[in-house]
Length: 94
Image (tube, rainbow, N blue to C red; front, side, top):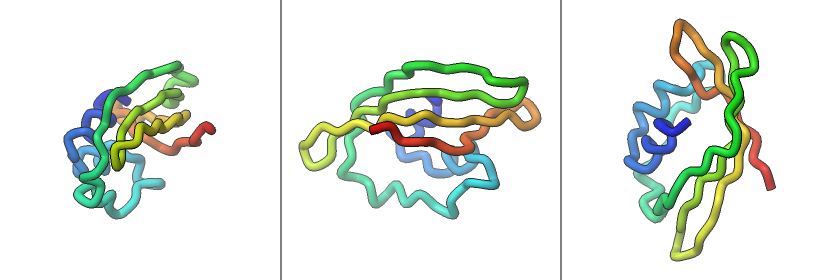
């Protein structure tokens, strides 16, 4: 989760797509279009390995857009394939 947040901060679209599960991965993220977003921090609220190959992470990512502070609160699902974790899906809270 932390590496994916850092990739968003740095605009590393290839890394994000490569760590996204192929069944749910978008074609592109177009991060270059999001230059107005300034990421401020990540707070991992809870992380749990739910089976040998699945995990859940609840987090809050804070950012500013147009000078206004915002937050993204999500519970994400990850799956492990051949010893690598992939983002599968997420549910936004609030």
